[in-house]
Image 1 (cartoon, one colour):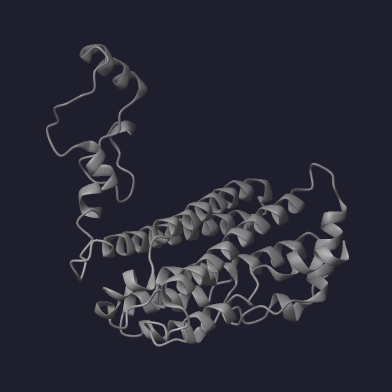
Image 2 (cartoon, helix red, strand yellow):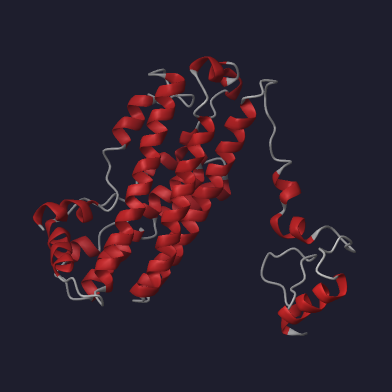
Amino acid sequence: MDQTERRAPNRPATVRPVTPGQRAAQAERTGGEPTLEFADMVPYDAYVQASALHRMQHPLSSDPGEMSFLMVSQIMELYFGLTCHELRETQRLIRADQVWEALAPLRRAKLHLEGLNAAWQGLRWMSPADFNRFRNLLGEASGFQSAMYRQLEFLLGLRDPTLIRPFRRQTDVYAALTAALATPSLWDDVLALLARRGFDLPADLLDRDVAVEHDPHPSVEAAWVRIYDDGSPDNHVRLLGEALSSVAEEFGDWRWNHVKAVQRTMGAKVGSGGSAGLAWLQRSMARVVFPELWSARTAM
């Protein structure tokens, strides 16, 4: 089989790779006009699955505003998954001591989080009256129950094993979340990297139970103070710290935007999933992503 005929994993069979030479020949045949006839489904649809995506909206009411709420929620789910993808790639590279290479997926993750934050703009029109027109139809459904958001939190080091309990009857989802809890977070991998680079981190910190949320440690803070003290351009760990800080900032902005959206549409009402709503979100913001990266700045 020719290399151009091989399909990537999970690529729909109707998407056929095209070489630059084939593309140039096609443009010559059509005089530069786009191709308008295809033997099968349109290749764009085959690749992006656009038709499938646009069949996934099932509003529960006739209120026209519900579609905004539903589609923005789905867009956020996609961004959660995309950011997780980039952070896992970052982990892979850090574990291989490829710090310079790890900067690229981290910077992409930061941009994806910017897109995630921008998605909130699509809901700024929503007042309590607007939300109340369909809120009751959601039943106990709540963003609190997003499994992919939990995956993102776990990757960033925010870990609470009790939060996977709602998924116990969704065996595949529950298994994936359980596995994520048992796997080191990105911050755990960064700490292991610092230890490999000669920074003095205690063994009980490096060998701790990764399912438990990391407590800030003075040795980690001291390591970052030393790292930032070296301003040389080849200090890639310092660049890693800045890229991680940008990711943490954007994620913090998303949490704050969530608080503001709840304030705008619900005030201090009880959350749809039974949580304390606004108060619960405000308390959760006290949990800091990559904590020693921030505390070290006081000592620099």
